[in-house]
Length: 251
Image (cartoon, rainbow, N blue to C red; front, side):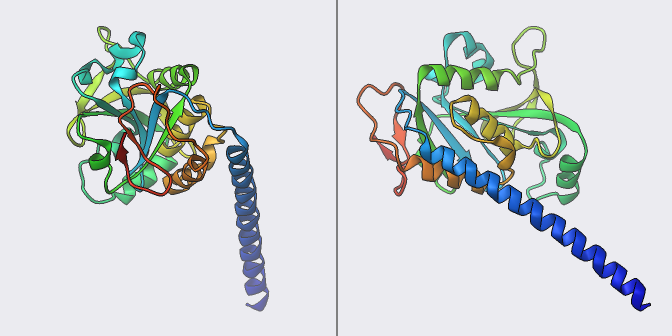
């Protein structure tokens, strides 16, 4: 009995040690990411991108008018709206209409490879009111980086044979739709990692796989945003900015 207890205790120590080392490596890698972000010079571009987080999920918001002409067809359903919100996730979990967190579906999404979907929303109200209860960060990037971001996002769109997108069903809120998406959803390739990948394509020196939790991503972006200079008059398409320590204000 005593020998068995000692053996079990040894296994527990080994498992605990493994996770401590794993967590330490994660913190080390995250620290390196934060360092690179802090070392990066502000891009001070003229194209605005907005990163949002609802607490468990994150994505990108674009001004429809700023989307390059060759890519506007991907967002044709929302051409009458000012803003377009885009995010990516697991088909079953994302399209679940249950207002409460469905843990079995969440575990299934993480542990089992499954189809993915895009959730695209068009709206016209100000960003200040839209994301009043959510986290939001705004950055200004170059035209080159903006085009790279758009190419990344649209690379996930599947065609229905007629349009460059394929509708599955209505979305979760507002004028929104779920669209068929390329790519398999499974840990560690999650919705928040997708947002970090989008930002990496926009010129941010991130290691996307580190950002499983949107709160960590938003905090790193918030610290990075403190260095950005006030927006100049030549900024295109921009109506709102979220300063580092203040609420959204109109320019």
